[in-house]
Image (tube, rainbow, N blue to C red):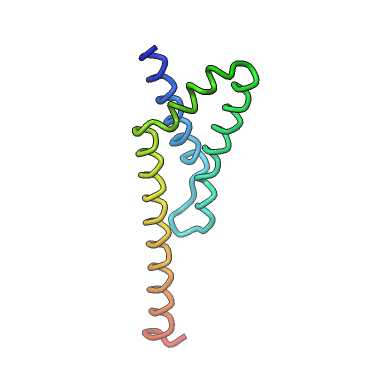
Length: 105
């Protein structure tokens, strides 16, 4: 039972980290916010498919996803995305300041 729980946690974390790396964009490109929705959608579809077959296993999956380690990993990814967005906004402000004040465009 413990091995299957560890396997499910590893699978969820693997899906949440592998898929955004495949479709990753440059740090200066916009619309990276929707990459967080892709693992959530996959997990939701997977949960619905498993729920149709076995509600008991789907409850186990739900409990696993709500475990502290998975919640901490999701929160860390969310925090990293927020910092990345703030960094992108800072770069845009610096570029704007450089072009308007220093270069006089």
